[in-house]
Amino acid sequence: MAEMLEWVIVVEFDPLVRSLLVEWLEEIGPRVLAFDAPQALPAIGACLVVVDLLNVREQGADIIRRVRMLYPGVPLLGLSTQARDGMGAGSATARNLGVDMLLPKPCERRRLQQAARALIAGI
Picture 1 (cartoon, one colour):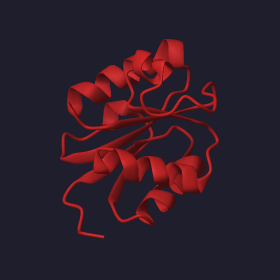
Picture 2 (cartoon, helix red, strand yellow; picture 1 turned 45 degrees about the vertical axis):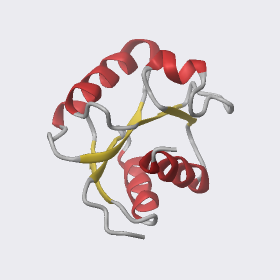
Picture 3 (tube, one colour; picture 1 turned 135 degrees about the vertical axis):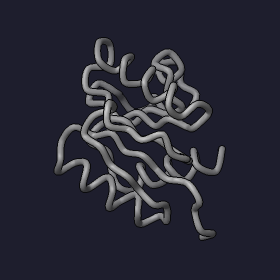
Picture 4 (tube, one colour; picture 1 turned 180 degrees about the vertical axis):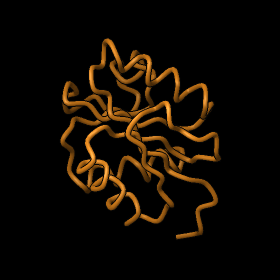
């Protein structure tokens, strides 16, 4: 894989899940920075943002707005315990939430890696 010049940003509130997401994403090549809250996000070049949407209807919208302001045009992958299979790229639910793809949480390593690769590649 060619060297990634930008970062994958992970926002995950649970430290164990955050660590696992970083490990899985680093396996596919990108450099990963992880944070426990969207308020801590740096304004750096990113090729993907992965976000834990705790409460999709209440906190999720605020998190997505903050991420979109800091990283305009960067693909956004949402993870939520409220998501269901079939809410992937381009689904009505993903579009309504303002994310490019939505995966149910917990998700499998392979699904996360496939989704990340597709969004980074612009597929």
